[in-house]
Image 1 (cartoon, rainbow, N blue to C red):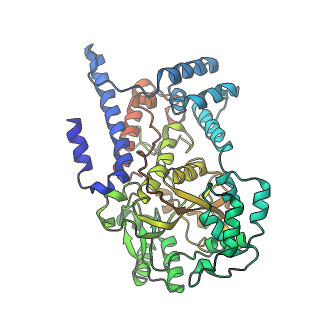
Image 2: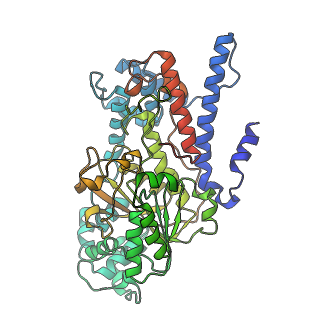
Image 3: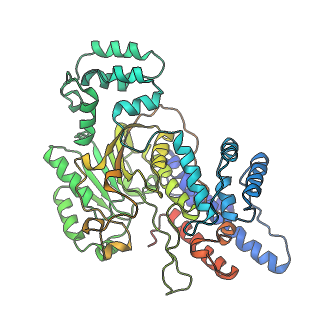
Amino acid sequence: MAEKGKQDEDEGVAEHLAGAVEGTLRLKRILSDDLKAALEAEVAQRQGKRPKLQLVPKVGEAEGNKIDWILRKWGLQHEAVVRHVLEGLSLHELHDLDASQYYPDTTNEWRGPAELSAVHIAQMREQIGPSGAAMDPIQVFRTTWNLDGTQESRLRLLCHKDIRHVLTHYDGIRPLEQIMVSAARAPPQRGLAIGAAPSYPAGSKAVGRYYRLELIDPRADAAVFGDANLTFALNLAKHRKALGHVGRVIATTFENLETLRERYTEIDDTIAELDELLADIYHEVDCTRIGSDPRFKDMEGTLGAVYYNFPHAGAAWVDLQPGQGNVTGFYDSHPIVNWRHENLMRLFFRNLRYFVKPGGVVKVASNMGAVGVRYSYILGSAEQNEFAHSETVPFLEWTLHRYGRAYGDRRDKKKRPGEGQGYNAQRAESDMVYCFVYKPTGRNLPPQEIRLPPTFKTIAGCQDGPFKGLDPQKAKQLARQLHERFIKECSGIHVG
């Protein structure tokens, strides 16, 4: 029966695109099986029987013992959500956490120990990775290849032509100095934007200007995902027309047209302008499932540029009872909901592998201090899928930064970020554009890693946020609503 359900889910996905949506379908199955097991266990408990469906433990014996030790040390043995957070760590990370002498603040009035622990662990990981702040191409190159300061200084002396040659051809095998000699001998690239001003002395600045001015492939199509009110796609379409590009702009929204009309009174005018610019407009597009979207059929390997501005998995609004006020007690960083943000990036980049052509660019704009989709989720997910980090550009220096920002949810009916309303705890100076180039190696990648969601039992055992003070029965009701919402999201159904 389970195999038949899997076949039903996979139906309609071309075999060569199965890897694009495998992670999303796997996540949906995990959630569905967990909910089924929880409901069976509840019935079995009432009947005094043993439940039939037994789920496989999340961690091995060594990891489980270390988690038990840390929870005892913290005095949080009964905190189900804290245990869930620790179950997401490798054994090496658990040892590092234990040795750090970190203890979550159990007296914090705003955030519980699970959320504090999750944020601390994310920051631990970010400390050993690249920064989320602005980085020019040479800084990114140095970080990628672990170069020293002397090598960076020599790179900064190269002209535009030479630095491009080094950035393109260095593979970590031949000595950097040898590549630099080859760069000096290489002829300029004629007839291409990247070959302009070859002798310009500040090579890194010339490369950075290329990313800021959005000089993308004029013949290739460009896709925009998650564009709430389509104003960024309109900005891009106008930009491409002014440059004489012949490639299409594919503008997508996650919501359906009816919802857009409720939130954005100007949406029909925006769509009309996009139509005049010959853009294709698709609604109800889930960027983690484009491999199964028939509208993207035959687009494999054709996209020269992809954009996703300020990605967010959505606020988990639910009702305790029908008609009751919305529950908004979870911050984006809370582990009950944060796994959705991390998986959004992982599954987004895995899908792009099948549609972006080699050398195509991907740009994800986000705030470096965002606690939902953290910058490390963007950088890490891109790296896992062979999208090489090329530069991090301050958003306000980007030629496409002027468009009608929106929250992308029900708040847009009453207020917009561009109307004096800002994003909580985020400054415009911290907005960044993370730039990547697709450099496939040709090797078969393993299935996409996903951040495992909390189980139904874990959610029902939550003791903070909207669950604070709830009796066990109401906690189960709320947990089921959240769990069912998560399953809908993994099915590409927009909620809220």
